[in-house]
Length: 249
Image 1 (cartoon, rainbow, N blue to C red):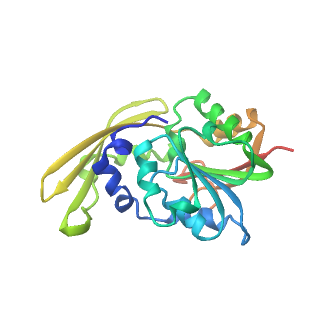
Image 2 (cartoon, rainbow, N blue to C red; image 1 turned 90 degrees about the vertical axis):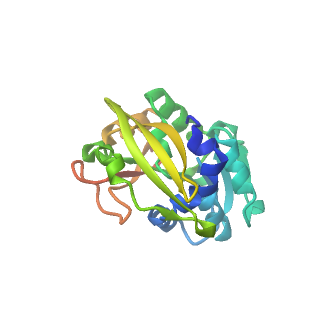
């Protein structure tokens, strides 16, 4: 996963949690866990919101992210001492103890821009997954074309920050090349009028592509949903492809 200013600029890292306060994905993934302590790896942990909640619930948690600034920010939060933190790709996490669950939240999976990137991640997951474990991740369904709404005129309302400040985020798609969607984000801070930009590129894979690549890696589908309410996946209308993978028999 490439690191852009969204994950490296201190001003943007500081407001990351405020801009990502929704928790329907966390609630969904938490619902997949049994009520006993599990060994869990959080890939692309960002500022540690999900990892910290898992640890607070009594799970044995490791968290990894390629952005040093994000991990440093996470380490300063209350409860961070309960978690093993790593900077880098999944491959930097030791294989010494297999994980019961591995999660990749926040659509971080879409930062994998080629089949080779996805197969490399799957291989790293396979090397760290317990025999009866599961890997969960989500990707936006390309049939819904969510990127068509990523335009400045569709920017959401400003988000409140401490001390009366606000930040508003606007998106603008700059290119669509097959499965790859490139876009700019502009973060405007008030009252100071500061603007910070970032550039991102995401890949929109179909369910069939994700399943085929998983099959190559020795994984099969254990769970499939089309939304955070657990709805059945529909190829033409579901906003999400939420997959739980396990070793194939």
